[in-house]
Image (cartoon, rainbow, N blue to C red; front, side, top):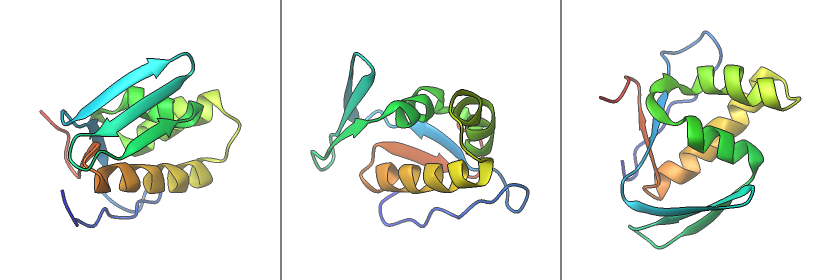
Length: 108
């Protein structure tokens, strides 16, 4: 998904956005922190607690909106609109490095 635009989603305004972890990464959880490296460009990311929740829930079948609503907002005190905006930016950055796959349909 190199150079692809990821649509901006707002609750109820677009079709769902589905996310899945790429197979082209190296990842290791160290305590409460997840370290992820892109095999494509060797970029290293350290995911915070919210990023870790999104990462762990990125199964390709659950929409980003559902992950935010049912996981992120349930665990952290944050408004759904703000959480979704932050999640979109996070996913967009990871997808740009080949770490996350994004689709408007569930992955198989």
